[in-house]
Image 1 (cartoon, one colour):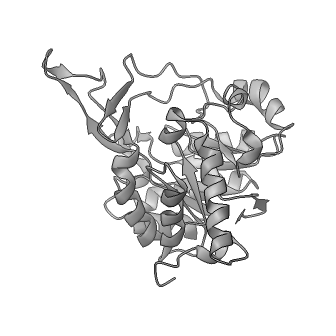
Image 2 (cartoon, one colour; image 1 turned 135 degrees about the horizontal axis):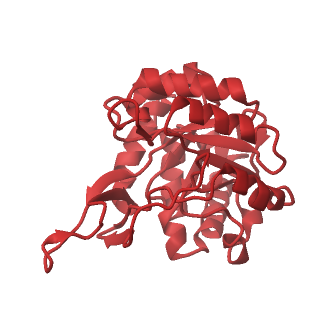
Amino acid sequence: MKIAELTLKNPVMTASGTFGYGVDEAQKVDIDVLGAIICKGIFLRSREGNPQPRLVETPAGLLNSIGLQGIGVDALIKDYATVWAKWNTPVIVNICGESIDEYAELARRLDGVDGVSGLEVNISCPNVHKGCMEFGTDPDVAAQITSRVRGATKLPLMVKLTPNAPDIVAVAQAVADAGADAVSLINTIVGMAIDVETQKPVLPNVTGGLSGPAIKPIALAMVYKVAQAVDIPVIGVGGIASASDALEFILAGASAVQVGTAAMISPKVFTDIVDGIDEYVRKSNLNSVSQLVGKAGLL
């Protein structure tokens, strides 16, 4: 599949926040198997993140409250982009901002950097100028961010959508009209866990983002709706742990998928999913997985 001018050898990517910057993970995963790597979210400056504990296992899922800990864009360019430039698998950088100006500045700094093949704009960050509302819940604000980032870079541009938007289809349409080359959805869903022994929330931050198989039906429904409303590629994210899961998203209208929590359990999951999709395509007597995109709907 293609995101603007970026061609991926297969439709399976890593999900941001679950594969670090890819360098350590490349020691245990054959990254040449992947269509693309999405690195963890990056801000202009380094961030310490939230206090421990940051992860809580839940039935069929995982709660995380990492707080977008990161090294900052300058360190990313210096320490990691030079490594990515030597890889055969493209790396897409997930960018986060506390203001629209910060998103645009990140895009400007990463534009033309060798080793950076695209951007994923994370619009689930707190908007400090609008009462800490997520940028991605407001179609107008989401479009403003997309437009500013589009004006600051020629890189392929994907926008990651939040499930907390009152109307995720409206947000998807807004960012598509503003210049996004693709959308990815969904980000994690807000959840919490309480320790009945201490009678307090397990996470110091009280709530966290729920990922894993528990959110797959929600993600699948949102991908289905968005795919029927926009003319740009849709990337499905949320609870994908097998080739069958990935194929559900593709049949719902996703051109590609991202795998996150499942890879934290078994790094082998990427190979299993890629091989499983290939086998399904062969058994279906098709020439390409693209022939399956949206087959479950009226696309």
